[in-house]
Image 1 (tube, rainbow, N blue to C red):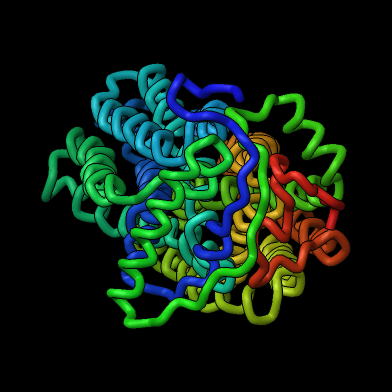
Image 2: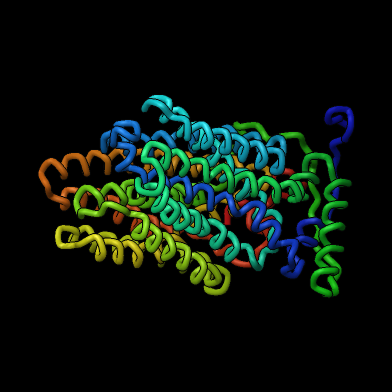
Length: 489
């Protein structure tokens, strides 16, 4: 037998851990998982909204003297950091475990956002936005993989959609708190925008306290030679769930046999993604690119559009309404991803939001701040659930050993294509259109985003996976399983 750090031996085992986790009724313990892990999206929403809402002050002498192009560049730098962080920390998450990395990535985020508050020049600001983005990107890989491995199969769709949609609670909070902090009659103009960044650190520390109680993924443990610890965690969870709900748990009869291993090489991960699951790879790329361009292009520059063309001084209330509509969409539509099914819901949310965005582009010349916001609220009511479903899809349709890295890969590629080019393109469009005093110049970005979303929806119709209420091991047999069978589903 091989040894792992002289403490655990790697061997072939048979376990019922996945079935035991999937049969659990919903309980307070699951709510702890949701709060401890899911609230990171609130942090991301807070970050992005604060930056979008600070565009005016960051352009002023009380800020950093940025122009519209640099505002877009700052958004692109943040997203670039998120892509790098996702890839770096995603690989480490699959190698060293979910818990270690979702603690580390949160600490990276905290350092980045606190140091951003001390920015004295554009270069320092860009560097700190990159570091903050690295922490957030790493969180996407570590947290999404942990959530899906801890939540019972019949709840996984709605919980994943709602958790990813909670980004918009942070966005709403960020929009509202900037109203008093950016009011020079209440807070000094040179101090208020710095305090906005410090708010993210306060929430992050609270999340860190809760997260200490979230266990390592039992699924990750039994594959990495720590089946005893895996069994102990599941046993403790079962006792707590029974105590919380009073339910009597039926015997978990399904088992899986795996050959334990320390890690999976990048070469095998690549073969798994591109050779074993090519259809799913195309699906995830289409979903991630569409939603990343749509959101990063529209939302990173939404505040700048309101201020530059539509005469809005304080964008907080507009952004808050827009954000709340996004969360309402994820909350209302999330259960349908389990009940109606993944394929019809993913395709519908992508196509409907894409068509509506194209209509907004055609009408943008006649829109006011209020009507543009209403359009955004309706569009993104559907788009928020669709965007969340991209993360859900990537986290459940690939083998467990590659899950975090697959999430990171698709997030990085999709975001690099849509999330970096989107803010840069919109920043330039706003700058060019403002010199001509014609908001219709921004419509080009709307049409590109609409086309990508509609394309993603069409791909989902033909390549989507009916993953509703299915065990993760049934959707994608672990690479360590002794009887792998056919993987492409």
